[in-house]
Structure formats: structure tokens, C-alpha cells
Image 1 (cartoon, helix red, strand yellow):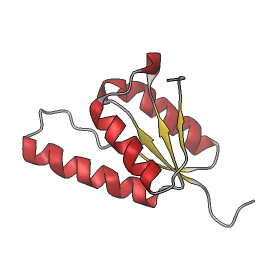
Image 2 (image 1 turned 135 degrees about the horizontal axis):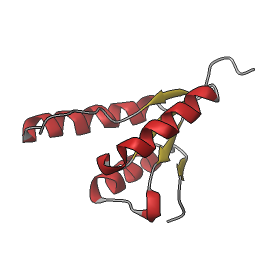
Image 3 (image 1 turned 135 degrees about the vertical axis):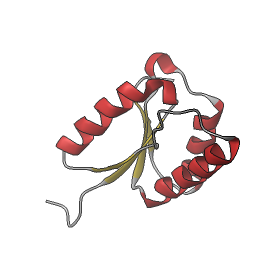
Length: 99
């Protein structure tokens, strides 16, 4: 067994929240530490969105790798930015669906 569990950051559009929860569960049951986008039930202000986007980049900093949840191959602008950020850091990036 590794010294510490792998840390995986989930990325993807918030429209795929249900699929991200499934990925989180599956990764957790496989022994990974999972960090994922924050969720909110209410409409967020622009300031809150900017703060959550910055916080998500810090989650990518912590991760060993990134898993992009992208049903149908969809990857939006924000997620593309997160992918570019992760790759610039040398983090492996994988996808739930081929792109």
C-alpha cells in the first residue's frame, strides 16, 4: 500500500454534479482522497464565483492528478482553463469520456 493515498481533483461543469458525485464515491471507495468543486444551492454572486474558481485552482495544486467529468465529451471554457492550469503544473489529466 502506498505511503499516502492518491489525491484526485475532480473538474467539470456544474451541470454534471450528479456524475461528479458518482466519480467522487467511486474514487473514495477505491482509496483515493478526492477534492471536488464546491456546490451551492443558491445563485452565486460574481464575487463568490471568482472566489470559488480560485479555490478550485488551489485544489488542483494539492492533487496528484485531475479527473475531468465530461459526459458526452463536453468540456466548457472554465474546465478548459482548469485543464490548462493542471497541465502547466505537470499534473496528469484524464477524462471520464473521450474528447
